[in-house]
Image 1: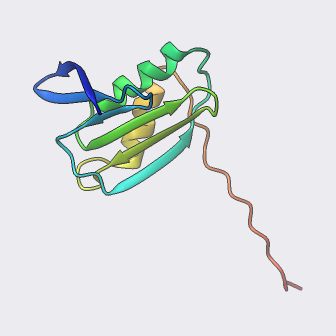
Image 2 (image 1 turned 45 degrees about the vertical axis):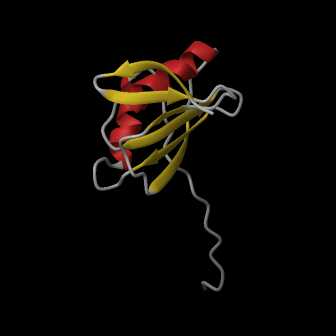
Length: 109
């Protein structure tokens, strides 16, 4: 069961009493993005990021986990892009390190 502690600019915003992010009911999210977040030190930090993300048009759900230092966002890719989500986290005062991938290349001579 979701409770509604506040309304943000005519968009209904809900929090889950079991803990876990902010969900808006105005968006049909079709993509999920998980990024590392550097610089969080307390629960207020993660709540600040969730609130900033939830204000963006196209965000379906924002969940920031302090213990894993990750933000998971459900979003509508027709309304918002990944880069905008990352920029919002950075504008809030935290860092999102660049994605790092390691590839194993075999058979080259």
